[in-house]
Structures are given as C-alpha cells and as structure tokens.
Amino acid sequence: MAQHVDPILLPTVPVEVTDQRTRDYFNQLHSALQAFCDNVFVTINNGLVPYYVLAVNQNVTAGAVAFVETISPPLTTATVYSATVTPNWLTTWSITNATTGSFSINFGTPAPALVGSTSAQVSVIVWLNHLQ
Image 1 (cartoon, helix red, strand yellow):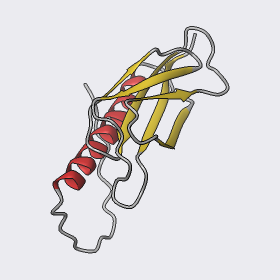
Image 2 (image 1 turned 135 degrees about the vertical axis):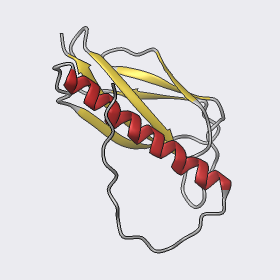
Image 3 (image 1 turned 180 degrees about the horizontal axis):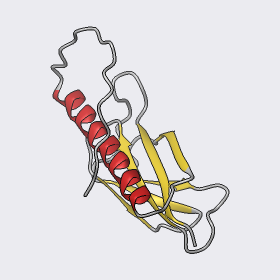
Image 4 (image 1 turned 30 degrees about the vertical axis):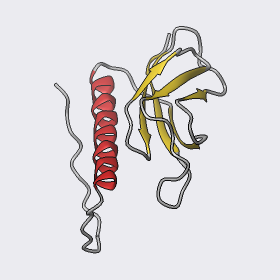
C-alpha cells in the first residue's frame, strides 16, 4: 500500500490561476511529485534504499518530440531505476531505450518555442529502485 507524504503548507500570496494550461501544468507537477514520493516509500518498505536521486531541469529544443537524458557516470549493469518527467508544457510523455547510461523521453506534443517567457524545459527525477 502506498503511503503519502503529508503536505507542506507554504505561505502564499492569494493568486487565482485562470489559465488552464498553467493549471494543467501544476496538476501534472503535483502528480509527478506524489508518484515520486509514493515510489520512494514503496522502495524503502521493500527494504531498498534509493541512495541516488538525479533531479535536473533541461532545455528542450523547440519542435522536439524526443529528448535523450544521459546518466553520468553510467549506472552498474542490471541496476533498476525509475524516472518521473514533468515538461513545462501540456503533453504526454513516455520513456524508451533505457540503458544504464541513458534513456529517451518521448513527447506526445512537440516542444513549443516558448512557454510563457521561458524556453521549453523538462524536469527529470531519476531514482534507483534496486542495485545488482
């Protein structure tokens, strides 16, 4: 059974977000962070400690439908890892071609030239599930 992390309440300025794309992005970010926390708890409950977490923000070329994330130094052979991806534009994503040194992130919607005032970016969180 997955456990949930208690929410952290931060002081905020009352702001109503009316832009649906912005709402969708924050909903997607919330889901990705919750999935990450749930997976960490499951991993720990199974007696494994995810000792390595990689979290990066990467710029994505406008029009790109795929992105290769490199893991450096490469993981040892037979290491099992998972990844959570949060693009800053509304799209679906999948991971393919996973090796100990890299994996491909595929986007259902090509990366836009700009999202608001920033270039298209993707946040990637990678954690090790099991070491061999």
